[in-house]
Image 1 (tube, rainbow, N blue to C red):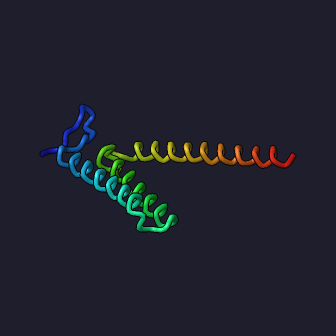
Image 2: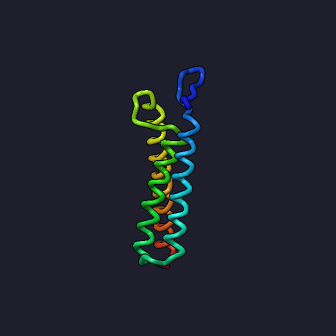
Image 3: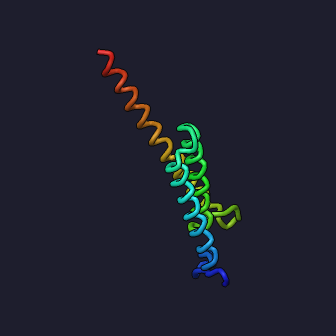
Length: 109
């Protein structure tokens, strides 16, 4: 099947692209459940495996469902995405820092 485009010429993917993304997402989810349910790895290994599977799943979603790629047409989408990730990271790290700092100062009394 061909790729669908909207009035501005942006790609919306094809049915086969969505099916590939769906199958990959399901496989990655099942692998995550298997890693946890089989207890075959140490706690550190389990955390590392889940982190890697989560990262791969995020990349699958970005590519197959949000159609974010490395092409020049996607530059603004990628810039917005990077800005959003940076903003959320700063927000989370700042919150954790403030809460940890507050807890440490409250415990010293």
